Length: 404
Image (cartoon, rainbow, N blue to C red; front, top):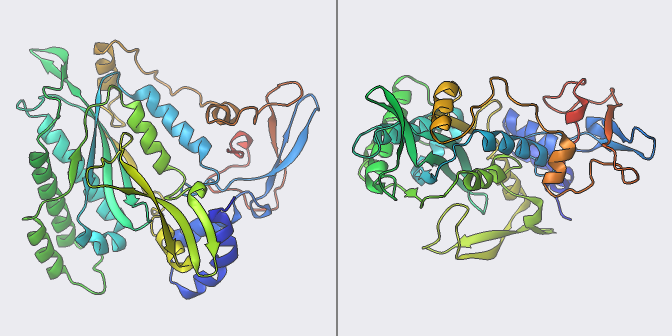
């Protein structure tokens, strides 16, 4: 199978000399290049009864690595499966205008904060209005920055409960969504547009934005004024009976980077050929999107690597954020809403994470974590202390070194 790792191993050294890369890009490239190689050290996987023993190299555990993302993706999804409310959900997509892409490239962290604040603020304001819902919903927002061809396409997917929690006459009640469309799309677009413009203008006024070399602060103000009179791309997809389907869709893109190894078709002397999904005009974004056709795209090797690395988030930046009932500090309100919907309350302490063996089996790796002779769960013993450990890994936590 062709792999992203093979590309980095063959071309990154010369590619790095020709292009200026950020520290985050170089770190991500080194992780993808060295994942499960001797450079990251090794560990021993063995049966406690002595039936089998083998050496395996450590995973890099970087969030854009397509090779070792299965366990982290399943852990994220497992946590949100337990938190989601047992009610219908809507899937809303907020897309930023292409004219703002230069500002995104030079201000990823601050731009992302503004985008999350504008989208969540617009939804919380409108759904808190008695005209539309009059209650506090749960929002789970996930940032995506790429298209199928790896071009920059900054947009936010938001999972929204079709209802909300609100006390009425001193009694807590669950308010179901009044309409099948959740909110008027044009109204939501206008509020989101106004809030994002205000967030960016305020950040510019405070000196928090880096001005791209080929433009100026005055041009950004003029651009935002012009964009304030245009139609922005905001989609409200139809109701889903439960949020797990959309969360599963989001999980595929939150861990593993913008392209999987399965989409690679051929490495050629003049570039990389890979498979893309082309959508017709009436195709919807999201897990139910249909009318999709497949096409082949060819990029020069340097262009392919540049496009891939531009989607590496700055280290420490949160690309998934919860708001309303799904916010981190709202456990008490979330438990009250769960009780109203007939669900048990979340435990005070988070449950113990499933083992990597069970996660691998759940993801389709039947028998990966068990002895082929006796069926006993395989154990992991960290061995090689001379090579650098995977990012974010302590040498005492040996059970997390192996991932599917």
